[in-house]
Image 1 (spheres, rainbow, N blue to C red):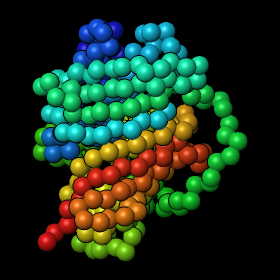
Image 2 (image 1 turned 90 degrees about the vertical axis):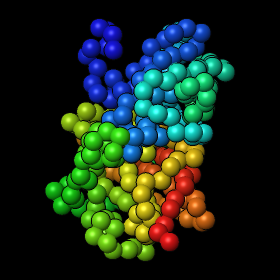
Image 3 (image 1 turned 135 degrees about the horizontal axis):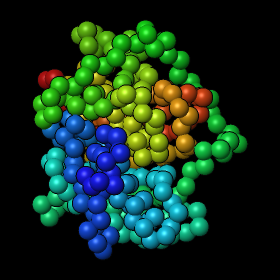
Image 4 (image 1 turned 135 degrees about the vertical axis):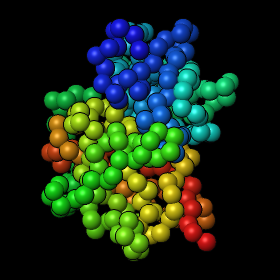
Length: 278
């Protein structure tokens, strides 16, 4: 980290990139944003978006926010040094389309297409579907325990404060549910406000929705698509992740996040691999 970056918080530091020329950036994939030693998919998407928006701004394009992203996770990178290769396909008035690939040991690990623009915090939606999730008060939703040491646990649980609705946590007590859904209150550890970049991470920060129906372990992401729909108000997010189909060894999950005013700020869907005890 350079002297210029000394003021960054842990999320900004973990997603920081340094230009090495010709649209290439150097990143240090942080093991504190990992699951069993492998960087979390939403975190990797945030790293790619950091490089993409940095490239746009350095070119003079005032598009500092990733508003839509779709990434394929080709192989799981290791924590440590990696390069991000950025190609700007088009810079428009409102939106720029950018390709970003996270490369490690000469091989592409994450391949992403991003649409970048500028979100207006003062803009009011013309229409917004109301939040349909009703949660118990925060004090009645136990926090998910910290994830253990880097390389051994789900360390992203140290980077967020996630309080799950007890109605969706029967799996922790050995109980099976009829619905594949988890929901609760979410914020970054220490209360740092969410911004468009950290919302990309938040889109993949909840436990698998299949745990309530008996799956084992976390689910490796194959493809993740995220829409960032607004600058979130300060405060806790309401978060819901649900599975729509589990078939064979694959699950598709939908993650929805609403800010403290009830405004939708993230819509995300991913295809992932899932395991069930035999």
